[in-house]
Length: 539
Image (tube, rainbow, N blue to C red; front, side):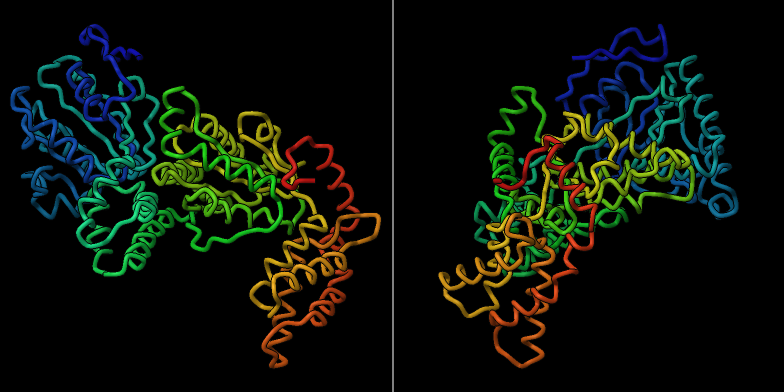
């Protein structure tokens, strides 16, 4: 329990007793009852916000009247919240189209926009603030008037995604983040809306729950109404997945990975991810909350290029049974001051709303390199991301990859940022055999025993020397098999034979990943072995 004292001084004598497990509606009610009049809502779900306000202001016993609630939209003017009709002052086209946003808001706030003792709701606050910085002083004037005459106080609500509260208003404000329905409520909606149309297995419902996480209740109803037009459950699930992809990718810096894959070798890493899956089961999540311990945070994969780091991240969505969302940090950078940090906040907010999910950041060292020589934007992004990783309480599992561990800031490598750091080196001979089997299983007409023997011989052929177990990388082997398949197709053969693969191996010698890296390979291998990080393979 925490106690928050009103910023208005002695006029608001009772502190608000806040239970973090209480609903937003309950907390909002408590603040209103204790005299707070300035609220900020971090949300894009304005339908949810409207329903919340209408529900609270429908209570006639408290003297509130929802018909007195008016909203302001920059560029459009004022409306009555309950029926979305233009307010009386905004009916003329001269007001709506002939004046700047700042003048519209000034007239709305001080002259004709509301009645005394009413509530005003401003949607798109960031747009208003950027076009009219003076609005902060006007809001402060209304606050001072509220303090002087608390009976006719004007309750002000400002809403936007990734909302920024001006520093001068922070001591007077209360900020909420509207949360989407939880897993239990989503399951109730699924059973209510599709139970009669499909024979829903438990696995089917669990997959739908993951894809519908992050949507508002109204959005879930619309998505299910649209997707249930397809009679086959698999087609319906694909439409729900498309809706999730659209939600994630409309941010511009996030991408929902559609294709899952598998990887060969790296058994230690695979077992670790399977343990994370077990820890993250719904029954265990309840115990985690009960014991007040954090959810699994994520892992960092470092090591040689072409050895499967990105493939492991893509395979994790199948192992952990979670959607995989890729964050492109390079696309976060904006041309305006503060735009990059806001883009990051919005992207992380979408990931939190979409949880449980995996947030994949590829080549992390490139995203945060050159911080000392930058204009400060990269440093601020780095600090914001570190803070989020430290304080994030949602079920977002981060998988980050890096080729050059030396370029990563030390703050990333300390205990507590990631649950574990794995080093991935060139595959061993036994792992190369498994990688060949993985790629050749569907292209060679061999029995299992014959394929096993062939892949063992191919793995030996890709060894660099008799004294070393290292050899070709997983990417090298994938390229060898791909070229062998293309060669077979060009020769009108129906399958790939051993001679074609051996010929491609000989072509690859001198061009493989180890050859490309040259002297850097031995230096990187030595650094990885001395790093103390968990080996991804059972070496």
